[in-house]
Length: 397
Image (cartoon, rainbow, N blue to C red; front, side, top):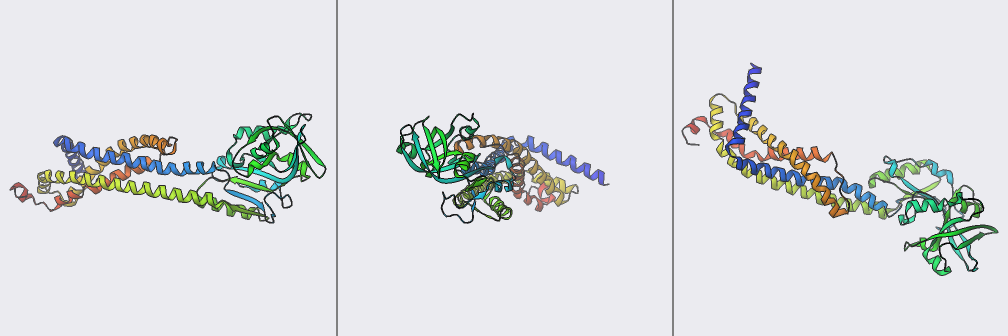
């Protein structure tokens, strides 16, 4: 008995679908267009929302570090009295997105810098540097890597150094000028490879390789500071900082609040705006499709009366029409969501200056939301449950 009932239901369902496709193609087009447009806009906004987190993270990381590891007793920023052992860097765990983790190791000190052959000299903050995170990220990473590892040159060749723009201006330094660095009788030489102009404290400093600074300061394996650029949400970064504090109890590990909090506020606002827009789009789509479904309900009175007259249960009849609405939502969602993801690529380029990366998770979510809207829009079909076959056949309904 059950197989026959199931076969009958399937036959009736496909008969309803054929009638939908052939009875009023204009109304069918309106319903599909409304659902498809809603799916496209929904998918585009959701893809932008998901991609915005990655974009904001990468944009904020361009400003530099968001986590600092420093000695607990640090007199001044450039003091060499309070230092950490360089082995501290070995305790830095890799976050989930390890490939995006960058950090720089620094050693600061005030040294005497003399230009050769002019003899001009002054005291400057020397910064020994090693790593993949250059201050401010304003200098090409390849350039910083090549210059700051130039101590690998032949022993009779001077190492290269980077000079801040203010130091270069005060001492009238040019590219290729030889500098003599000295402190407490120890000396090192370097040649100006380029100048650095950040608008920050880096403009008053001279940058050399970390090993050179350690030799000059007689501070082997000592560092003043570690700066990290940690990827992830503010909550993930906070968890990463707690992990670091447990691993390195002798150091002061803290986040740069203006970066993490600023990123969180901006993303919350963007996410809230896009979510609200998606909600409005789905609501308007529901109302538009619901208006079309009201006319469909009026046209289906004879079909429902006939199905009830031959013994069809009200619940079963309603289920058939809801399945029809779900299929419309599925068809429109599959096409509209795909178009929306491609649309988001152009929108991302207009908003962020870079094309948004398609997120696969957005596609099934947009299709599911479209199907939900289609089923919700079929609410007027509930009126068919109260139809009486006799009234329909007499033309009273």
